[in-house]
Amino acid sequence: MEDEGGSLPGKSDFSAWYNDILWRAEIMDVRYPVKGLYVWYPHGFALRRHVYQRLRDLLDEADHQETLFPLLIPKHEFMKEAEHIKGFEEEVYWVTHGGTSELDVPLALRPTSETAIYPMYALWIRSHADLPLKLYQVVNTFRYETKHTRPLIRLREITSFKEAHTVHATWEDAERQVEEAVALYRTFYERLCVPIIISRRPDWDKFPGADYTIAADAVMPDGRTLQIGTVHHLGDHFSKTFDITYEDASGEQQFAHQTCYGISERSIAAVVSVHGDDRGLVLPPAVAPVQVVIVPIIVGKREDEVLAHAAALETELGAAGYRTKVDTRALRPGAKYYYWEMRGVPLRLEVGPRDIDAGTVMAANRLGDKSAVNRAAIVDEVAAQLEQFRGRLRARAEEDLAHKITLASSMEEIPGAVRAGVAVVNWCGSEDCAGRIEKETGAALLGSDVRSQYVEPDGGPCVACREAGRPALVGRSY
Ligand code: P5A
Ligand code: ZN
Image (tube, rainbow, N blue to C red; front, side, top):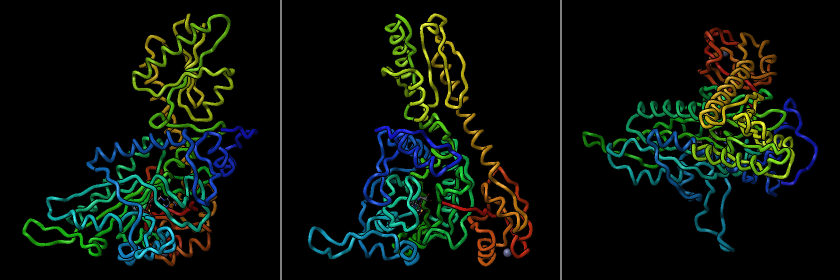
């Protein structure tokens, strides 16, 4: 899109870097004239497509089926579940008119789809043989967010809301589903090379209408956490409200137990933020719209030969399933390198007359490793290069997160820990102590039962009251 000149701010100024990279790498255009709504550039949209394809693949492999429900929810359905309404009433956009006439039944733009989906589940589910039911959809949802809106992070139109809704016979079956979903999100973020911290949200922060909520957080470059996925055990709250019952093996009617779990384009914000550097995006091969870019090095008279060579490479790699592109534009190689680095392409191949003569191709990955590889075995070489790159990217991200997590055994240690990232503390579980932690350190109690490979907290006295505590996550969040 147009070049507004200048260059990308260093990533050490994360907020300036983030705002700039979104247009420089052609992810999002933030100039749409409605607050909290943004436009996907084609490159960003291609990235989104690959990220969500990975997510769909994982859900499909785990026996979920994709579905699609309407955007509009009648007011009487939306208002049925008391906790749910309390949680969302300030965030709902209402459609009240059709043309100039007022609607008999106001319609909510879904902020999430429980109240759209569950009345239909009540019709669909008859017997234990219908369970478990595991459906998901990828849709836009609307939330009238009052906190500071940010592209990909806090939107008023979430354009890429993957929501799964499952139904089970028993509370324990639903609990197992929660764990399956957590494992699935773990695998998803592993493919994106984004390390996550799993924890249980405190009760005052759980999803409205849930028994409990498990969340996945990433830690952003500025040390603040980003909640990039949540899994909720809904118990029988919604099944009682929407009358979702089934006949069990002995012919009795039982209320079903449910879960739901969601991921938004925050997953893409995490990929952009965790991996990017001063030169632009750095994309994991699994989701890079272009995985391999070929830059012909044209010197002297052998232009046609070099271009034919590059085209043959593209064909061969394309046939092997790699998203490959030859950059034939009339630009100097350096300008092409800069362009593709900004867009995060994992691997660049350079071919010039000398490489042709030597039977080699120069391979440079987006983390700066360079080597000459064998032209004759190019498909295997590219596979090995991308795999090595993926490993490096993941190791780098994990190391970075390990540095951002600090164990804090007293109140005094928390401010230092949360300046660079998050603190893991022991906490007794009381809201009072969470309040004291927040008041005295400026950082919030984000979750309990922290699951992270980076810390092995022992479980000691609560940092606030010194009663018996359990490991909890404290930090500043987006
Ligand atoms: C789970 C899916 C739900 O809505 N209902 C269906 C459940 N959960 S949630 O926690 O409220 O949202 C799921 C995830 O969506 C992301 N998210 C957002 N992303 C961008 N902009 C927003 N305004 C926004 N609100 C929530 C979070 O990652 C959240 O965990
Ligand atoms: Zn305490």
